[in-house]
Image 1 (tube, one colour):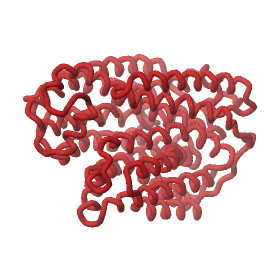
Image 2 (cartoon, rainbow, N blue to C red; image 1 turned 60 degrees about the vertical axis):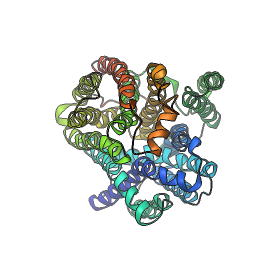
Image 3 (cartoon, helix red, strand yellow; image 1 turned 180 degrees about the vertical axis):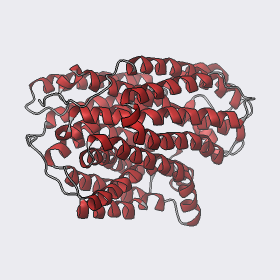
Image 4 (tube, one colour; image 1 turned 45 degrees about the horizontal axis):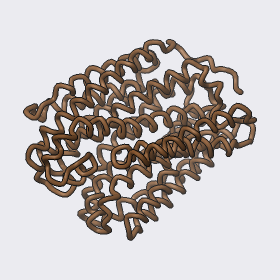
Length: 483
């Protein structure tokens, strides 16, 4: 799709606003949540504000990817922004925690579009030799939004009201839509206009149930087992439906393509590790130094390393090569995560921050080339499918990683947590740190045992990612035939 240079700049700006809209949500809401709980209550449901958002984002992503290939990226971008802004407005008006969780589900559906369609648009309006640079810009904007989110959230809560944390999405969304509406010219291509709704429903049931199961692993394992069984049945039903679908939502033939499988596997594994680090390193730092500002400080270098390196990697992907950057990124992640297995209570904060910065650098090195590799492989006509699959598996990896490695932490810390009043698991631990600026004595030592074990497991997962990355082909310019 050829775009005039001036139009392409405006489209890129609109896309960046869309990426910013989704990217800032996680960190800005996290900062506001203590005030939200103080205002409307519901501390026991705290984790579901984030879990339900990620759940609905994950299950809506594949559908949005397929729909934008059929009906056009422009239309679906508008739909995604509209749903996200609607959910944000409703969330800001919530009077109870139950209402907030329900409206976060609506917001999550819109986020499923915002996670994939902006990168799909970039992949279409830029030729293959410029896609890496464009995606690098997008990754940098995502990283910057996650860095400024806590600070912006703090000022909004102090100067205005926590509800404006959600209302902020309205003007940003309107700006993104205005730029895309004015500047993006597109045709929908030759994809058959048929939507595999039964396949989408089965996939949503399967993935949604599995994600609910991993969320309940710590607190209700018997219930989690039931959801896991439903999830596996949903996945089996999805496979059965896709075998006979005229236009499958996710063609099973793609799982015979080495590039598709390997890029999504590396994306899954790297996100499995990095999002667990983003979740649990702040708890460790907060247990040492107290206060939510220390938790924000722990996330800052990782976000800077991720966004800054993504920007550079995107610009250099053609010169260096996709496979080399992906391999280098997984190696850097493996080394930096392995070093985390040697952390102790006496480790200086400066060394912790340098270590997590290196984790972000590794993730930043591989994020743009993973996406450009699969986009180049599947081609323009299936750009939505290519982009949404990568974002879907990354989202899935991050969500499952946080839950599974959280269970690992809980098992390791179980006996010693009993000695800390009011704390019997990770959920209690998070709520305790949320409610006080003075962590209980001995908590940091207990967390050290759990976190270093998580890092040791994560290092093994990173080594597996390295092994998969080195088997990737050096070039992916030839797309396989469409189904």
